[in-house]
Length: 79
Image 1 (cartoon, rainbow, N blue to C red):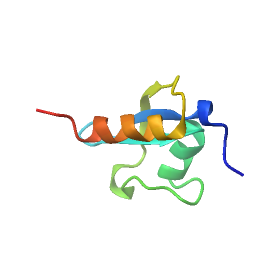
Image 2: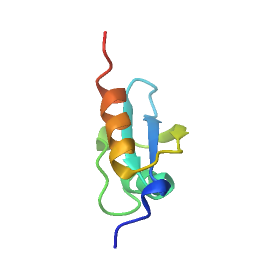
Image 3: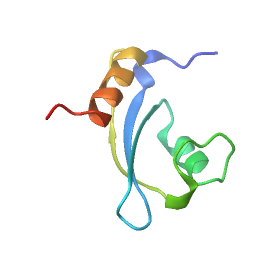
């Protein structure tokens, strides 16, 4: 079952060395962090950066597609 659209968040992670970052979108960033760190199956961030830490969570998107659009724009900013 799909999560309620308004629950979607975009999160910013930094690895243990402080050199790598990762931006993702999820209705549950804490669960995704556990996945990224290998505590739960399904993580997408590189294992080499573990442990990852959440530095910032952005919320308030009106839909999942809005959150994903923001995630994409954050990953590929205009210069």
